[in-house]
Length: 325
Image 1 (cartoon, rainbow, N blue to C red):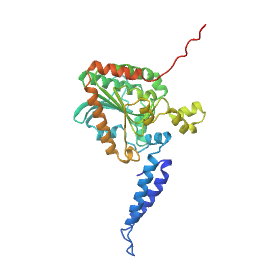
Image 2 (cartoon, one colour):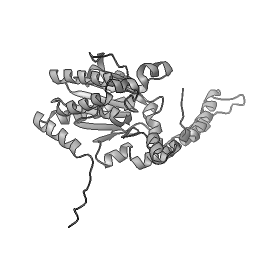
Image 3 (cartoon, one colour):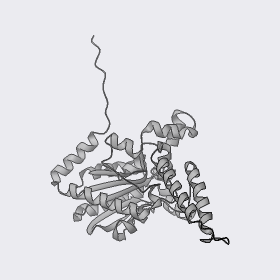
Image 4 (tube, rainbow, N blue to C red):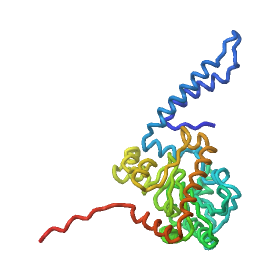
């Protein structure tokens, strides 16, 4: 079942007409063929898609990143990876289903893969907490990363969350401390770490599994310190200013690459990852393997030094010169 976003309505209308034509017999009672009209509409839809998706605004990319049919972490674990064996629990409190991870193979090599997972329907979203992990989710991720470091396995993380869960229970169990520990520990793990933002990359919830030697991002994903709605509510006192906030925040893949905050933008099929999940999975697998090869070729000392320098270089500021007395 197709799901069109508001800005895709012109394409939706053309697609509706095409579906109606395809529902007719190849020729009607008068022997008139619909094939020429169908081909014409198909060309028109393709041209409209190229025009629309080559000129997306920041807010439209945010909407695509949140598309309900967009592939999630578990989808990629079935397509881009093989032999995934999920591990559960943080050995301290419980098993957070918003954070999944375990052993897998990527292009034939063994890795530990960790990612945030959303739900497809209400029942699964409740189970997965809408992809927003609790402290135990980050502690589970850390437990798996320590296993990877112990056995010399590369770590791959897939990021797709609006942010860590901000509820009372999460605060009581020290969500900030759990994320902070992950940031510290990921900086010193000796094995290669590759991260990819596959959908939403929200604030510390994303960064809690995002410290890596290479940070990749899918073309229509975003990475931000705050959601556009949250920014709009703070700066403009109006959540409907989210499109303006999305543009001001510079949170889309092209903006992030230009700022040097991500290492590569992985292209998506025309219309977004949900239009061809298998092709997107192939692109993701090839991108991860390419960067993994480059990072593994470095010595341990060089890899750690570059990882440290990479994150130290984020954020630039100037200090005013002292005024002479």
